[in-house]
Length: 327
Image 1 (cartoon, rainbow, N blue to C red):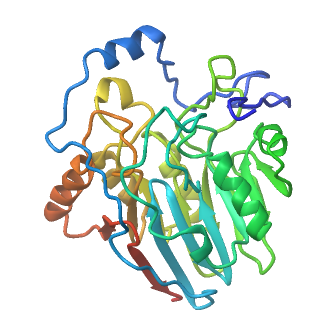
Image 2: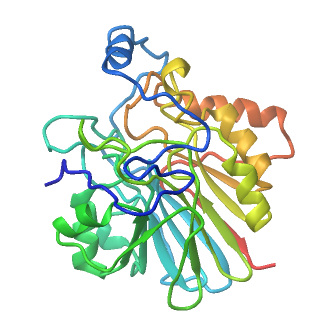
């Protein structure tokens, strides 16, 4: 069932106690009282979400990229990453709602920058965690039918994917790797977040980011995360990344979101901690999931970048692209 979140049974580790996963830095799970306090005290943003019916631009991508990397922002946390001759989608969401049902839950305010039929052949799909705005079973099933990619996700998510008819599933722990045909390596990286698809499966499956790269170029996809020691750790493990895909939205109110969602200020700090040569903002403007408005996060980051001339950090519209050539 779509609402079943799965679970993991395996050896105890520094982030798994035998039943539940946890962050490197202690975080407090939000209670029902916390949720109700937020919901009944929500502040209306200065820039409310507006529905965009039509795509704002036509996006063209090559069949493959062998001479560097190309990242195309589709929507929310969905990016088409073309690197080392392979095509990878991050947290693909094409559904109208980030929800277990089609008639309730957060709706999209931007159409995806590309239709599924416009995508090049997809070799791999990385899924950072099981929240509905990141693990969209309806989209994953369409990708399975059309491309038969390998699905790479965190520990414990296999049962959920298999129950929906998906196959060729790879589960990764933090710092574990899988090599695609052609030599591109995908490594699970720590993140600071949580997982659930219902009220009884909280933190039973792993959340993570991904380092995607070959011998010459590296892309870091943060998934969904708050600030934590993992940015420094990733830099220590991999050195400077060529491109970091960093979430900036759904960050207000800070008392509720701070532990698990980066703010624009946090994302800029993470960019520097990673030693990223360039970053792309993601996770903003598509779904109304916090008290920030449609452009609150992007406007804040743009203001910060006006004072930080050293940071190469792009705030894309849907369809926006970053192209980097091999050194």
